[in-house]
Amino acid sequence: MQFIEKLRKNISEKNSNLCVGIDIDKKYFSNDVSVDELSDYSMMIVDATKDLTSAYKPNLAFFEEWGSKGYYWLENLIKYIGNDHLIIADAKRGDIGNTGLHYAEAFFNHLNCDALTISPYMGEESIEPFINNTKKGIYVLCRTSNKSSSFIQKDIFSKVISMCKDLNSNNNIGFVVGATNHEAMEEVRSQTDSFFLIPGIGAQGGDLKNVMQSNKNYLDTTLINISRGIIFAGNHDYQSIQSSAQEYLNQMREYRG
Image (cartoon, rainbow, N blue to C red; front, side):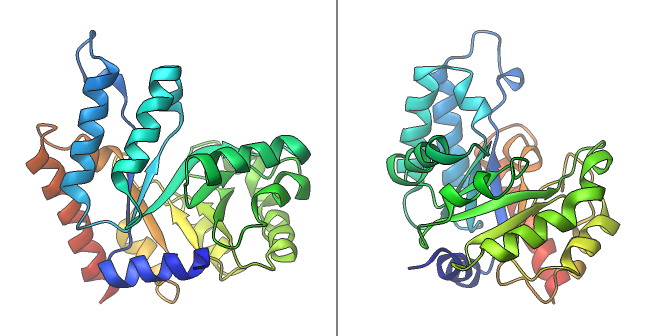
């Protein structure tokens, strides 16, 4: 099954545009927290949200800081999630040539992720190694949700979109577009009908209703990522996590109409 087909299938069958970001920051735990405890917590997140979300987005930084133990945790987490949800590795890779091919091998074949976030700063060569397999997708950083993003991105995002259009013969290139700048999202959406991964809702303050409205004609391929607003909700327990995920999903369904 091609990536775009799996994306549509998951969103449709689960009736959900939700993507749960798994950013297990140790600062929310005791000073002596272990990798095993964090691993158990991440799997509880999956248990609490698996009926509500279409995708999971583990952020590699929170695993890599633990070295080999963190990588082993990531491998186990991906196996635990299984094949019923999209798995998007938030690694922001973007190297070229043979190096890029090895990154693709690591994330798509060894870890068996469905998609990967990509930085396009080095041009076409930073994207080409990751798009040969039609079963796998990439989300290219386009207009991100951090405060200073416009300093660079407002001048080059159109070039990023144009470059990706030329490369997208396999229909497996989408974009990361932040929710915190509604005008920027409108600009990006006016230039492409590709699939979006949208961070910035929840702790970062993006407006969910505006996001749904801006993408109303593309919701069959739009994923809206929530991380801290779900995974560290309430008392950081199963019920709080599940309730928060359900609330976000209810809002998405309401705004979708």
